[in-house]
Length: 337
Image (cartoon, rainbow, N blue to C red):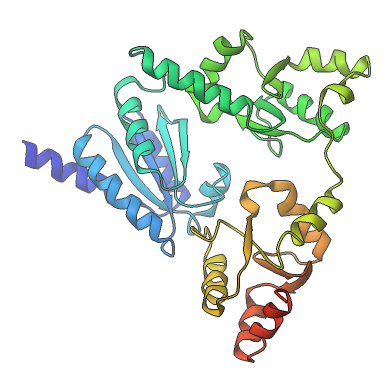
């Protein structure tokens, strides 16, 4: 029996989604059980590591279905669920997404699988310690930026009319804010209602303090108090100038030095590391405004982008050419003199 269960789990862990249609079929077929989908890429070593973690979890939880989906090979599904980096894990029950995990975090993946396998999409109801942990987490989240918006969806793609209106008001007033998608985390969604004693969404916080929901923000706008309550965003062009000059050699990429999140960024890191020149990086996946704005600022439509002393050198192809011609080191050292 045990060997049979382990064999079945191993088979489940090996299921590879080959098309959008195949993915939809899996959602229907596995609707009654928890389905964990690993969005991965063959060039990312952290994905191979997480596949091992997933195989181990499959042995421990034979009732859970584990599948792999190569993010760049099935772009329709990746775009639908806003997958911008790998590894990313989505959790489904009754054909609906109930949770998400971005990055190679084995302990967090284990925790989420255990939780959803036993209680579905509801938050755990155990002893006082998880409640304390949640309270600390909510405090950190509400203080994560000077102005934090808890909403349904993202500023680029709001998932409800109230959230859409809130984003429009904040953008109209050039207010700098970060956001959290409460649809991606049921524990936060329910916990924040109690934490703030505010039953609906969206919710806007400034310096960790609740300002209110859409009606309050509309009132503040009408009374011309909104601009005094919320921090104004610096002009994007000024911000990009500061960022491109943050270090003598600056690389704008997908991911970080430690963990590239696309093949082109990985290649350019390898080239820069081989020169021995010091450089800093900026993860454009963490900031959509910078990601889109820098394309216009530099008149360069793709990433990665390499800057020396605030001036654009180019992308991966240009850097490869400079290396082949023996010109890369002098260009980079020009930024470190």
